[in-house]
Length: 97
Image (cartoon, rainbow, N blue to C red; front, side):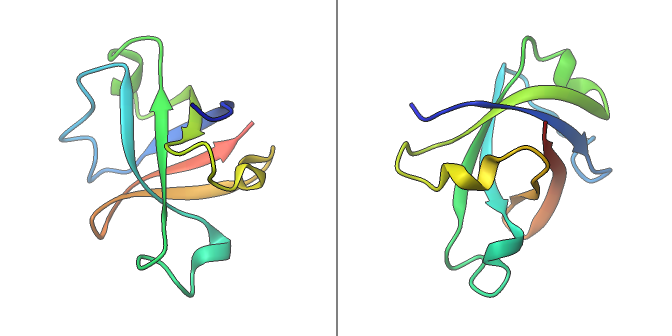
């Protein structure tokens, strides 16, 4: 398991109809650095929260990490902002705390 960081998550309206039912949510992230190659080259991010109820808020704090420990941890530095997607549907905006 890779290094975890604290993040602030804001679900977009499209995601509010189908929120996570467990303590984790894993999906594809789009970082500003990857705009030219996304989605052909993308990183998977795992969000972890204390309870599914926390993730049912529009905006909340969580812990994030890359799915693979070899992924570029430098993308998860404080102040970085990235988006989460399910397929081509943008589901959240994440800011590293």
